[in-house]
Length: 265
Ligand code: BGC
Image (cartoon, protein in one colour):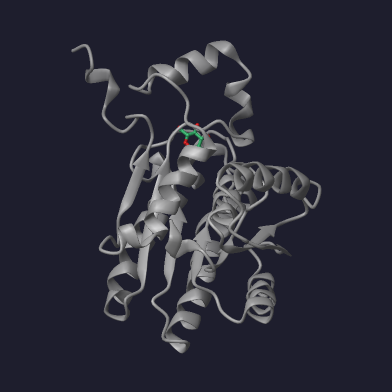
């Protein structure tokens, strides 16, 4: 995707899971990628390995990367991250709002602090990052792009993960609202909604054959998705191939959102 070559892109939560795969794919496409991480400098080594793997597969197009530390639930960290990126590359073309966490608890027992933590990272953090990106796009008259990483749970209810479900429902609304508000400036805002994906956030069921089987029964294509598959869809939405698409969520879920129970009814 030639148009991604040379683009300056900030990816939040870039040192694990889907964020890591998106970041690696973008470097391989020749983009300059700011890899946001938090407290997990060691995971940068994994990210570097994945970047090397993808870059060698796709020919080296000269993409660079810059690790930027910061907690997206802290406004001051976000502002500092933007400063670092602009100082290094002069401008930003694309924001990938990927950082996300989830905490399990029956809804009547959720601790207020845990609720706040999830909302502050997944929703408030994503909005604050988007706000800074849009200000920059407007100030520099750039037709920038925001790509949010949502979830199938922006539409599928998720018992025992109420804060997560609320945050992803909010991401859907934010995607549509910002897309509409800034379409007159040529700014595009879209989301990907991954289903069950082979990343460490899912170790609890990936490592348990029975739970994994139960998860697969919810997926018409019969298998778990890979982070690389999520990254491919993300790259498409950021490319010029998608220049007429805004305000949309692309579900990459093996059919999980197709009411699989109806298959044999
Ligand atoms: C969650 C995963 C879950 C998947 C499908 C994702 O948004 O992060 O933990 O397995 O949705 O339910």
